[in-house]
Length: 119
Image 1 (cartoon, rainbow, N blue to C red):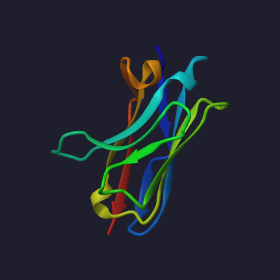
Image 2: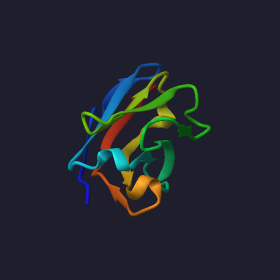
Image 3: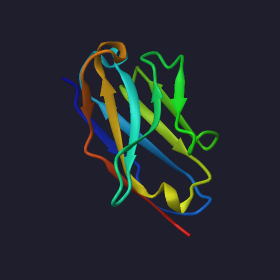
Image 4: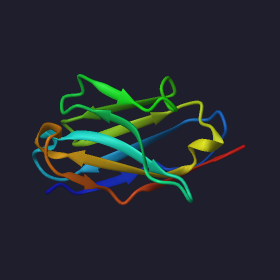
């Protein structure tokens, strides 16, 4: 079982940037597909971005396409979410999630990190 710790959240003005990090425990990080989700107050958790186990393919929600970039460093057991051109509607708790067995197995969640974008 993998354990995930997110960091990098904070308060930023609209138009600004933040980079979130998610550090994973264990020696099998390179067998996990990695994802970012977010949950705004009063809303359901929604998909933001994902990366295959080796980073060869990435996927994005339409709402963040062209502004956010997911990347991973398997040597550091870390996945990143670079967020540019932030908007107030990006305000949410951002969660990292790991899907075992190259994306076909169980999903594990981090505790989340708050991102607040002021207008």
